[in-house]
Amino acid sequence: MRQTPLIACLISAVCAGAETPDLGQLERMAARFAPVDVRVDLSKLPTSEREALTKLVEAAKLMDALFLRQVSAQNESWLLDLVRDRSPLGEARLRYFLINKGPWSRLDHEPFLAGVGAKPPQANFYPAGATREQVEAWMNGLPGAEQEAAKGFFTTIRRDPDGTWRAVPYSLEYQGELQRASELLSEAAALTHQPTLRRFLESRAGAFLSNDYFESDVAWMELDASIEPTIGPYEVYEDEWFNFKAAFEAFIAVRDEEFSSRLAKFGAELQYLEDRLPIEARWRNPRLGALAPIRVVDVVIATGDGSRGVQTAAYNLPNDERVVAQKGSKRVMLKNHQEAKFERALVPISKVALPAADQPLVGFDAFFTHILMHELMHGLGPQAISVDGKQTTVRQMLKETNGPLEEAKADISGLWALQQLMDKGILDRRQEKAMYVTFLASAFRSLRFGLNEAHGKGMALQMNYLLDQGGFRASPDGSFVVDWAKIRQAVQDLTRDIMTIQATGDYAKAKETLDTMATIRPEVQRVIDRLADVPVDIAPRYVTAQELAPR
Ligand code: ZN
Image 1 (cartoon, helix red, strand yellow):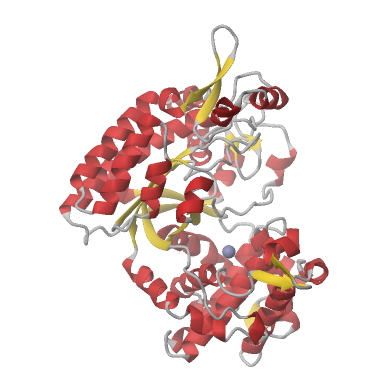
Image 2 (spheres, rainbow, N blue to C red):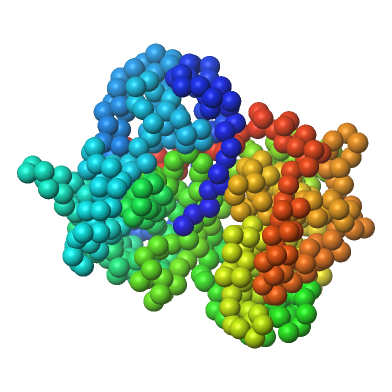
């Protein structure tokens, strides 16, 4: 699973009309994605690992071709036409096509090439011309093992010459590219000196040919190496009919040593933090269990489903429940993607939302440190709870309010936790002001994405609570400031209030809180309105990857 906020339609001319955008419109649509050169420092990698990495970059590029074909059977021929068109409009179309991996604008849910029609929700996973109902009925009519294969992650459904349907394994459907990808992974496995990396690469090379991904997913969970590759069919969002079929993607990355060690340092303080949560002592967990592994990496190249529209900031994998039951799942955080988003979106937002004197306090270190703490805080606070003597979970009790509240909890208690660690001397106190001011600026980034998504809704609740408690203040000139006399207490109170709702499983209170507090107030909306020209996201150019594997 991955974190990509829904974004409301931002260019009304495109959203409203059925017309194909002209050159000017297309350039404005593409300008929402700020071009960024992504470089990664590989100077610490020994030659063996750099050579292995080069093979992986080559394999990653194959995932792009596969994903294009999965999105639409016509994608490759449309792409060829665009490459041949050297007019300014043709070039603008090609650029936007590559950002979206097809002729449909993923931000606007509209086609931007004439004659392509609406984006097919079933992508290219099912027989052409079939309806959702027909496919569903056909699948449900199959006997056990066949039905499992038809509904599985790694098959397409195709029509035989005699008209009957059958499930075709990816290893057959995409044989050419997967054969080549398998060879490249085997070559990389032979080059690397890191045993857990070699085991993953060998097993994944085998999976591309056998169509059985289980063992390689397990090896991916056990991976502990300076290179962190994720490559293969993973997420199921592109199959909007059933979410059954996995799309090809790759994230070839290297471990970020600095933030990985900071993460380890925080990990050692979690029980200390749990013991001091601002809630009744009986709701604290005296013995926290093992945490799901988190990796902090810098992306050398992302391709396919991993690089379309809004760029991925972090992901949890694998999705195969059998692997999750046995090995859990792993969270991978893409530091340099986050850094590029910070530079291209958050810094410009801070220039609108904050007074000039506070703008220099906004920093990536504070931004990313809070994101790390946010992830860790998901593991703290009430989870398994007892309501009226019955054992249950926060998620079950709070139902649809759980997502926004849990995100708000991780945000605000993350801030609370960082303050605790500063007080304890674990974190540099000179970062204190940067921490709160950066949080304030980044609140506007989340709110801009709207309230139909858990992070945005959770942030609206936090913003309004902190405004009501006086921790944040709107100035007469429209900018927002932190009130240093009140912010600490306000953050602690909100942490207490949310965790108390969770500990008591109080659905009515949760709903009332969100209904009244998760709104965009006029003074906040006025800032958001002034962000129209700030890029929504980034369009990475993977410079280091190009240097490693120029073709
Ligand atoms: Zn979260």
